[in-house]
Length: 140
Image (cartoon, rainbow, N blue to C red; front, side, top):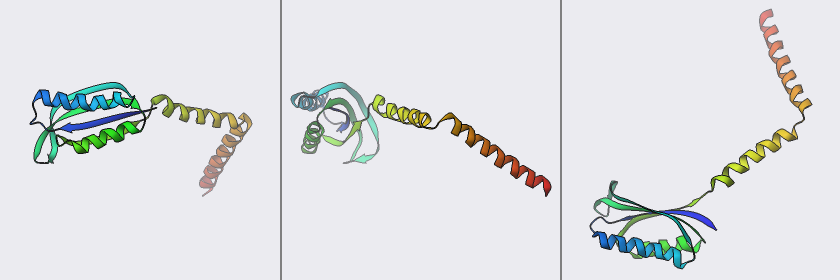
């Protein structure tokens, strides 16, 4: 299963009860589709960078969850149907272990593939080229 983050903006003119109702309704979708809610953050009302549907501010909510690909698709379908949602964005989260582990393994394998003798040969050639260039410049 993949991890996702979804941020959505709710219009600020709703009461607290209505806002909580929308948040709970969206969180229930995750559990109904057999997903696992990792964290839910309510950032509160914040000023928008530019007006959206004539609103200057919105109520921000972040869901971090794990599940199948049907969950974000269903959430986005519900966001489109709900007039109280101004904007939404869903991204797939990469786990740090997978992302960083692959890079380290590749670099270790590359170093192991090059024998020590070759490393020394490369440094010797580089030094010879450097010193030969210096000698040519001194002669001029």
